[in-house]
Every structure is written in C-alpha cells, then in structure tokens.
Length: 314
Image 1: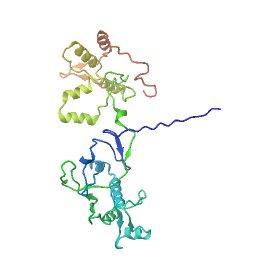
Image 2: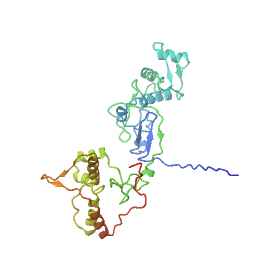
Image 3: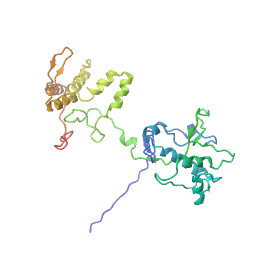
Image 4: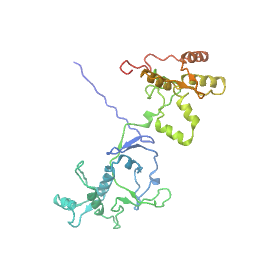
C-alpha cells in the first residue's frame, strides 16, 4: 500500500527594505525605508502611523478605492452616531439599525455596489469625538500630522485611515543577484535574464532615460555595447584590462546586426554607411573573438542547452 506524505514547512522572515507590499486595489510597491516608531509621523493625540504611502501612486492607476477604504476604515475604528434624517444613506443605515456604532465596529461594503463617496464623507463627519471632544480627521478624510523627528506639523493635512496591507512573496533576499560573466543568448548575444540562468540585469528603456537625463553618455555606451552584445568589444576590453592597456572604443552591437539581417529577410536592401558615405561590410567577428579569447585562455564554449532556443521559439 502506497501512502503519500506531505510536509509543509513554515518560515518566518522579518520584513525589510525592498520587500513588496500590496493593498486590495492593485496598489503595490516596495518598502523604501523602515523607520523606528518614534521617527514616524504622528497624529495630534500622539498615535504614530504604521505606513506612509506615496500619493503619486493614486493618479497613475486611478484606483480611488484605496482612499475610500482608508476613510471607511477610519470611521469603523472611531465608531459613529448619525443625527438627522436628511440623506438617503442616513435613512438606509437607520433601517438596518446601524445609525450608531461603537469604535472598532466591523464593516463591509459590496464591490461596485456599496458605499458611495457622499456616504463615506457623511460618516466621517458623524464619527464619535475623542475624550477631548475633537475629531482628528476632518470631513475630507485628512488629518494634521506632525514630523516624528522634529515635532513640527506638516504644511498640508494628510489622508489618514485604516486599510488592509498584504505582504507578498517577492522578498528582496530571494531576488538579490549579481553576475560577472555568464551565459549569453545564442541569437542576440545578450546576457540571459533571471537569477536561475545566472543572467544579467535588465537595463530597460526607462533606465536609459535616467542616464540620458544625467548626460552619462559613456556609462550608457558601455552598458549597450561591451557589457552586453558587442561580442568582439567585450573580449577586447577584458584583454586590455589584463594587459593594463587603454580600453578600446566599443564596436557594433550584435543586436544591430540581427536587426539588419531581419530587414534583409524582408527583401530590403540595407547598407551600413560610414560618416563619409562609404559602405561598411558587416562581416562576422567570430574568428577575431575566438582568437583573442584563446590568447587570453578564456573558454567561450557554453554548457549544453545553455542559452539555446527550441525550434518553436525560433
């Protein structure tokens, strides 16, 4: 008789900078800094906030649900007492016997068919005051916060409330990775991607914009050529470093040659011209690469199936 045994292993990991968190409205992000509680912004009664979220995360995705959730969470934490009968939401709450509630009352609102903005705003105005007879959060859902390090109040009021924040499995300790030299893609000659393949770091379009904004032309050229798919250049650079010589000028990236081949496959007559209008022959540099590598004692042969592509992928 065969028996199946499953063993579940639980592991506790302390949250740290770079770990990923998310709310329930597609609002995800990584922790930029973990501060002591005494350095966090605090309310007028001295209560420190747990998490500070960047407001720029709201206009881009337009997920206003996260703001309404924080308002409704604040109302539930304070409790409420509704007076008057001059609005639909007040009458609806009276009908179900929810015209008053103690602090930390559990609330729920159906998706796409629950509390509207006016309902939430009205509830904020109806929250129970604290022992000093004050409501720390105004009708707009914003409160006066103080800097935890200086004690000075911030210039503008800030939205404060309670929301669900989830810790995701994307932990920085599992993702951190560095590479020296490793496997390259067979076609593009660029480093493979991903920690599992011992790949390189992806330098995307937006990262290129960042270097362009700072005018870091040489760093950008290096990233796009000798650190990536300039096959001859990356070997010559290694040779120059070993011999203590000046680093040579970067050559033509392999991806540019692949682009030309793809255009030629579409029956386009593509020629590469020099600055003086002379046609340049895009010859294969494999022989030069292997010659230089052999002189330096570098083995350029890959392990079996490394960086290779199947027929379907090609």
